[in-house]
Length: 98
Image (cartoon, rainbow, N blue to C red):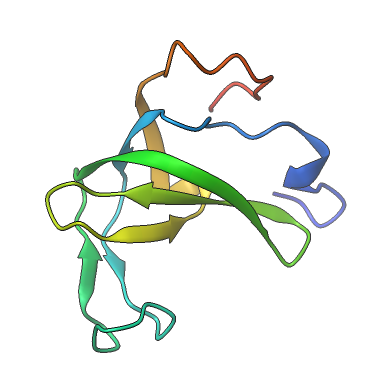
């Protein structure tokens, strides 16, 4: 993302209920309660479902992803996720991923 380009100017890439895969290891940066800083929250290849969509610093979307294998709901950025399966019940407009 370039400085003059805001992700929020486009619809979200992922929708509620979409099945997604983590592209990289995600560690606790101190914002995940109940886990030590540096603890693994999701490993590369873990599968989860988007349960909500928020924003970060009014520039980008944060996707809350529920990982069923751990029960964790982790905030992820677009670059950390890839689509596995689109939720056909979600008809909201979206930006095409990558």
